Image 1 (spheres, rainbow, N blue to C red):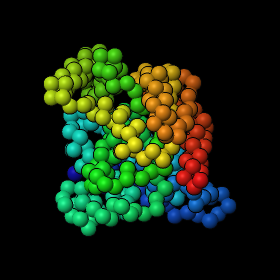
Image 2 (cartoon, rainbow, N blue to C red):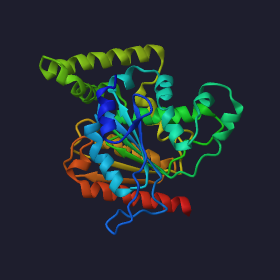
Image 3 (cartoon, one colour):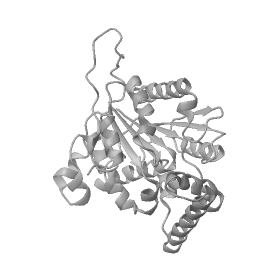
Image 4 (tube, one colour):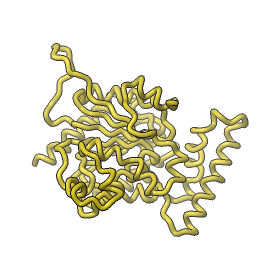
Length: 315
């Protein structure tokens, strides 16, 4: 039986590739004068990593926005259940992201990722000339993007990093220090399940904080980096995240989940490591709420950075 997420995604025109990853081909382009114009420098694929526990109805305006901006692009949409991102191992998360890679590469890599098939592994060195725009929302979306980068590296450690021209960091990443972030993290986790709980929200947040504390303690005892720590480091690691890909940070000082100072620190680190970085601050918008509050500024920032990214690649 189809899940609620699958049913809603089908209504949006997306085909499920697995329970988290969905795909949509571009619709046939009309030749009428009012049709959206396309360019041979537009992205051919847009990959959207939704924020934690976002439902299809929550991301529909982002889908519509990209369809208006780049009507000929393939869309890949990844849902990010918070609990799954937190309790799964890196290998399990990476396995779930394999369909993202296959969509961009245009071929199966399943056996190349998890078996020693030399012929398939060698095909990873040559991929279709896709122009890929990656859009990551919140830390949970970032966790799944980092898992995609890891899956690509594991498919062939000798290959270059996952090919993309631009990375949009929407309300992410933040600090990974546990004690200073337990309040916003537990609130974000509680928001995803509060509707199912019969008691006051503060009790749900307290349970979420206890759960996060347990995970943190187990990870500390085992010497394992948290999912958030791995993802925050991965997107600024040239061995994993293509140093030729331009980064655009979208953020607000009113965000009560991700502190703007932490995001600016991450952007500064990216610049120091050689990435081309743009940053767009929004006035008064909440966590992953910048597009809803300032749609014109939001889409203009993305279009502007994409043009700069393509120009940098062609230079």
